[in-house]
Length: 375
Image (cartoon, rainbow, N blue to C red; front, side, top):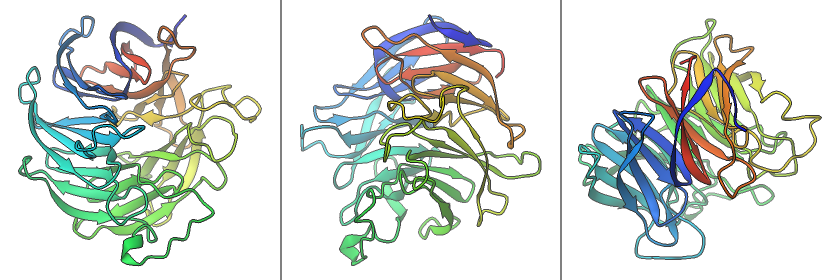
């Protein structure tokens, strides 16, 4: 049976499992994990009665599990998945006109070299992406200008020195996991970039053509979980600038207890300091190893004030209050039942709408639409 605190299930929208959910107006956009389903658009004007209104598909061998929408433009990722399928399709981004969400119109595909794009941020003009690129090891950070959505133009790129092997850089990680930009997020003239087992980086992008490193850090040598998302908080908390960092409970470098979330003080952004962590109570037990996908995954990139919903894999939706960043506390949760045919739930992403309703996607199947009294 599902468990809940200060939450109530309004509806479950049955669909293939997904990697990201995003709300724009009265529509929910769902990026799916596996072909042929790429993106589903759902009318949520009545959240108790969600209704599919459109679907975009992708060919075999690719997936399109991330989606962002702004100013009538929808961007989805194209990333190689498994054995080669339609090699003519190619990795990168799909760009659509969704000014009428019930009838998305394909504008163009932006192509990159290799596997494609993983996660990204989009503000309606610029996309902050994590593509593979020719001559580089792993994914890098890149900024695209979509002033003309039919002709995306690269503005700037950044990588860890050593990734650009075609440029003669010496590769220094023979005894470490390869670098991989996972998820850049923009706030103002800063880009907050998660880099998987290479930690996080804060970049100055006042000049987007020349991103400059401000600071970085990496906990993976001590905690074996990859850094998934860096979420800066727009307003000071207790007089401090704060960044929430989510580690992902997959791809552990060695057997370990489940991944958790970190709170960093970035008041002096040249010297980020971890000031707190948070884990679902009792989940780490005695610190002994547990299977993957039991712990932390992704905070909602939309939140209200100091209240942040998280997708916590097998633990479902967790809602934290970080008003005191030194002592984050859980104020609500919803632990869904596992989808039919699966042993555990696998909550992969969560977002909220203007009404404070949460949309929680399971990577195996379905979206739970959840009302809460704390948003």
